[in-house]
Structures are given as C-alpha cells and as structure tokens.
Image (cartoon, rainbow over all chains, first blue to last red; front, side, top):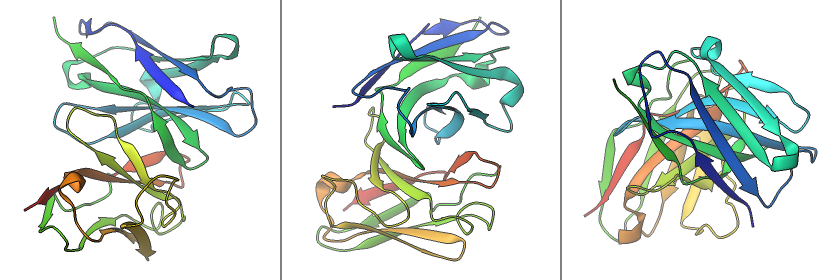
Length: 118
Length: 110
C-alpha cells in the first residue's frame, strides 16, 4: 500500500524560504519508473503542478515558478523535499505530494496547509 | 502554461448522466493521450478517477468514463449518485515536460 505524508511549517513570513518534506512508503524512489510530484492548491482555487523528481534524479519544474523551486530526494529515508524561496502571501495554499504512475498522479498525500503572513 | 478550461459547475439528478469538458491546446490535451481526471471532496486530497484519457484505476466505478476529441477531453459520469457530488479536475502532460490542471468543475447532484 502506497502512502505519502507532507510535513513542514504551517506559517511562514513573506520573503522566507519554505521547506516541505514528503515522507512515503510502499514504493522506492530508486525503482525504475518511480516519480514524485508536488502540487499546490490555494484556498478555494484550482490545483497547480509545481515540480517532479524521478527515480534517476531527473528534475522538472513549473515554468512560472522554476526560479524559486528546488526538489530533491533522499532515497534511504524515502523522502522528497521541496524548497520554495521568497514566499509571498499568494503562495498560501495546501501543498500535496503525489506518487506518479508515469503520466498521472496516482496516489496523493493528505496535504499540508502553508500560510504566508507577517 | 495556461490552465485547461473547464465549466465552473455542472449539475444533474440521481440516475442521470453528466459530462464535464476540459479544453486545452495542441501542446497539451490535443498533443498527448496523457489526460487524467481527479475527484476532490471537501477537505480531502484529490483522487485519480481516469488516466491516459480513458482508463480507470482499479476500484473506480465503471460509471466513470473518459474520452478525447482534438483539444478537448471529457469526463462522463453515468447513473449519477449523491456520492458523486464533488469537485472534478482534469490534468494533462504538456510539450514543456510539465503538467497543467483545469480550473475545476463543481458537480452538484440535485
């Protein structure tokens, strides 16, 4: 059974850097074909894809947020980390990580709400 | 990358069928058979309902079906049930090696 859980600060101040961790079980990110993405959803709004990391270390980022994002993995800990710099109130959202089945988001974590406010 | 276009809301009575459209471009929906659909109930994480345009994951009711024509994909729910009331999002892989979601459609079961 695949499970994922996001963790990180619930509140960050504007201009700070956000670090979120996705801890998963039921699969290994060292297995060929495995991928994990981060997706966010502002309150009452639509989903937005942020970044993806593959089993082979390949990384892909949202075109509009690329300069602020960094994704990494720790295979031994079954974790994927997302870093987003220069946080702004418009970045207030629930952040999800999801295991990907090649081209879709097969299993999602429960999400973690991050509020950006001074 | 612009969001895919979905109707803001659709509604139907129990037992009826409804269809939700998802319109993109030749760089996403029209260019790849990598469209997926997600159901999201209030306060919950999205759930994969359809992948690769028309395939259902194990455990998803066969009342849910997907299709695509040109730059528009569609999700059809037949035999509408109260439990189907939720928000639905489409997603597509893009030529930029990124993913784009639709704006979401709120389904109301009357």
